[in-house]
Image (cartoon, rainbow, N blue to C red):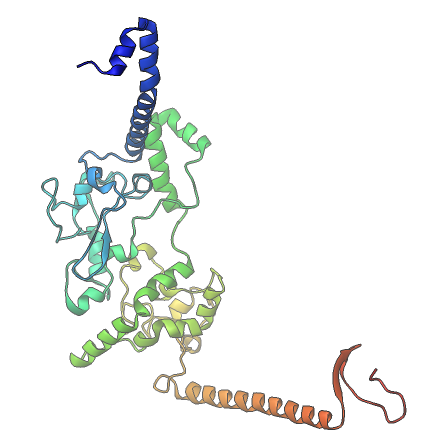
Length: 394
């Protein structure tokens, strides 16, 4: 069956027919070309970011790749290629960590990533062995924070590796490797991509890029300021005859009351944060994973080690100086003298303020009774009629 459009075109010159068809199909061609171009740009961006050889981004590229857990929490499984490409794990294939995934699409994940597992695709350039975090993981397991990945009950309150380690960007303050450094290294190493990634890896460590004092205090406070978490551990310790740190219940509150805490809140970077005292100075990046209670003889805050810990900043510190409480509170069971001294000072302050307000009210009442008016002029506020005829009230 021939429609009207076909009949109309059949009576026209072939060139006119071709032109008419081009005019009608131009928007479709343009949209198709646009979609293809955007797809190619996305693919190039992903390939330039990191290699997705296992096709994980088929699903995980979507921002709304989320689900609600049985506990009511929202979990996001969205991977941003451009961000992941600048993190310390960019060269690690997904299944080197998620080794329990055997098929695609995979089933529900219940195991989780174990940070002490070996990387099957990344080798330690110094030893030639498969790369692993097992050494630092064992140090963490021996600390007061150490626990297994999948655990229940009171142990699940403790921080795991990913609580503190969030796969950080190499250097947030640097948009990319400086061109003059890349140009120089490429002369011998030839591969620009290799040079850029090696620069990011080494420069982060050489420049000692790490959290600021405020960020460290904020990170530690995320657990040690959690009232429900603290109450659970206090109750568990009482029921099982376990010993908790003397300042466990008020660790954050007392630090903020201290001189160190107040300087940190004002943004001063040179004062002591949590790790400056609770981690050893020697091999700092290992010792932050070996936090121990103050009753442990290996802890920097143990009574036998406290003088040396204070000397890191206060070079003339002695036993008397180290005896000063770094986590001061006004609680009665923590320090009787400070508790009652603070109450007395509070009482004196209230009496002084109320007394000054009371005297001001009495004076105001008396002046009003004597006909004194409140008028702010030429530096004085109270004015009244003069008995000698020199009236200052106009």
